[in-house]
Amino acid sequence: MFPKSTTNHESRAPCPGSRLSVQIGKTSMSVIINGEQVEAAGKTLADYLSASGYDIRRLAVERNGEIVTKSQYAATVLHDGDTVEIVRFVGGG
Image (cartoon, rainbow, N blue to C red; front, top):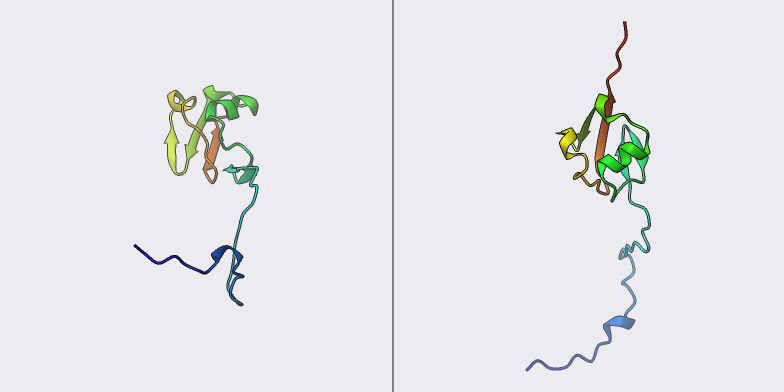
């Protein structure tokens, strides 16, 4: 058996010069979409596109450097820190 410790680690103050970093209560998670920070983490790509008014018939989407096919929009969940580029095709003449 190991001897019982008599030191109370919970009441010990940090050493001078030490760094303590604690993040408390992070409530929003963001995704970078076309260069702008957006609170969309946890949503599917299809949900985000629909809520933002995009016509998915005329889009190309890239997530973290990978092309996302239209058939994957509903299954692709956006995560905190993702980078998404959305390109709209515009016809003219």
